[in-house]
Length: 462
Image (cartoon, rainbow, N blue to C red):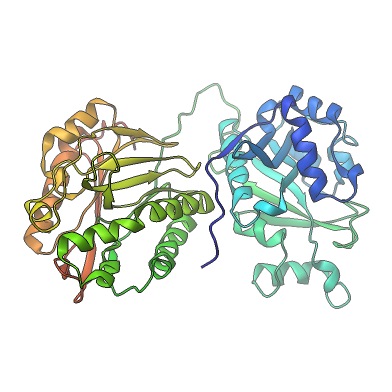
């Protein structure tokens, strides 16, 4: 497995003039020709005429990406046009606040930070802005920088079709197609100096399905949240890398469906206890806890890379202040921040076999799309915990669990349904199935994952 790039915080925010020096430095590293870069006056103009259209990606207080855009009228860009024409020779006097197209004029990510899907965040911002401003579509001219390799044998149309069918990889067009843009036409001489694209560009478009023609009536949009549930199959894993090969598979899959959250089960890392079977049960669970901080850091990296909020299930954790063993998990947000939650009511078996202590923390967590709470397994069977969270405004309750029998699972499921009804919130549960024949006290698992909704339609989230 490749080493994890240490990232603590990712943020997409509006560009400010104070960012210019750092932005220029980052951009200069990308483009050898310094004349390519925007001047301070040009950036100031863009911020003045359309501040919400100019954004930067910031990683640990360092600007590593930028996206610039203007608003134009559809009639101006629906046919052939050049970059110079649409930008008014880069004066941006073509910006029309009353237009209906969000037109992209720049996107870049510093090479050192590519492969982390940071550009996708800026595209998602643009889509949200397009919807917020009730614009018809996002459009821009896209380079096809690998076309020069095939220009002698195929026309641009054939090249685009082969990129679309994944027979040819193009670093720009492949990315745009994977982000739901479609090619409207091929434009000649869009960027006259673009030798790699052979002076060709694709006119790309993303349609805003929520667009409403101008009206005096206000159209309210529903808030929607998508969650992914991992029903984890217990199997033998030799190393933490083996575990995370499977973990990233699930995260990648649900992020491909644009999920906002992914939930893992309680003690999903239990297969690694097989390595400590020569120890007693209490010693082996403490040995498993040595992985917890690395697991947390790997989840943070995956949350950033796949642009998804991760509820990590749970794992054993030794607190330095009292050397006590606790059952904890982490909310790893897609912006790189994280918080810990604890199991309050540990089961009699966790106390008897492992010597676990119950936590004291009952709190809700703010995320970019909902206020959430997390209760680990047995905790959901106690109504007072979720009631406290509901009083704090909880909209979604996540319940990672692990049960070995159908009876145990039924208690978790029925109580989760009750919590949804009582608190007018959504409840999401995820558990493990299968068996671990070489792990003491964790040999069998039984589960069905699910999402439970309130009985009434007056919940705070739809």
